[in-house]
Image (cartoon, rainbow, N blue to C red; front, side):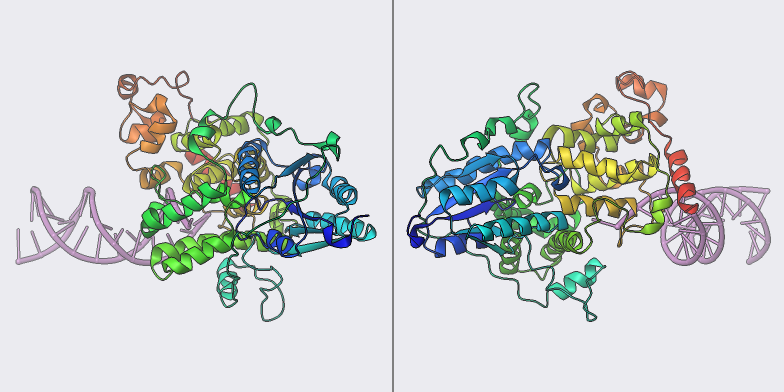
Length: 479
DNA sequence: TGAAATGTTGGGGCG
DNA sequence: ACGCCCCAACATTTC
């Protein structure tokens, strides 16, 4: 065995793919030990929901970018594929690592896996050092007076702000690295090319829209504070405009940390409406993680128990029409196609398509959750489940079930010029006014002039909006 | 982070 | 001048 001071320290990167504000990296560097930086793609533990297709595309770029930062300091990023529970202890054993540094995950299943890894490392004479690095605060630190946890976001967010959020850390200077021989775990190396689609290559729109990585993430944050945050209260709802931060995939992959966002907003001044409302969205993200931590059933079961009696419709064809943006309801199809083509959807559009799936189509939110998890570059276990339960009305702090979005009303309000629909549903591009929002209600002459043949060039609606609404209300009343 | 149905009010046209 | 009706605009309630 090598002398104890030369034993390396492993930094296990997970959903924290960045150099700055990385408490685990920071501590490992401060230990003075040479570092081994590793990422493990674990497809052998399906219970932990491996990344979906869009997230993998993002991951490909994010890993490369992180490796670039490490190489600039003389190191590299080791990427492995397989069961993390097996590979991590093997890596530690074969490199005689003294410690593994990582950030806590939130879900019970993840945490028990980390506990087992901690025990395995302990038996080998190593240790796991864990920090809170993907949230503002330890979810156990925010407690009600009675010692419970908050079930209402507003109360949670107010309580959280009475605590001191740690200042973000700088990138550690002068890192030293341990060279991992090619022979070590040579059979478990991740082929990173496999993260990207081959044939068909569906990522064209992704590449045009996104540049993964820490540097780009920080730029997004700065640009947003400079240009858009002041107009956020109104701009965040206009689906055709760039009124939102588009930080979500950077936050989900950890290119940007919530503490960095928090600190940047404090510095910018969080007293006016724009920054304050934007910060409350960060609060909603934090609340989702907090809820996932305290209620591990969040992704799997309706948090409101009365919905266990709900009989959702099982219509494979309606679900498919929704997934592919072929419902015949323009604002819904626009959102779903934006998702399909770019891996992202405007938040207002997410609410509209979510309401449409769970209410007008009366399909279980879990089908929507699964689709979003596979197709969003910002797919996040906590946010995704929380938001679906919110929109479906099945959550703890959710919309009343009878709050049903009328897609046409929503489009008229938030896409008043129809630009979003025209961009993503180009076959309707020559319609104007009400016909663009509701082609099924337009006159024959108007459709003909717009080059639209319902049922041929664009679908008839899969459900009559009034009938769908009434059906949903009836299902709710019967609960 | 609703929408639709229903109720109320007030101005203006008109006999 | 008056009553009546219509209806838009707004408020309230219901789902």
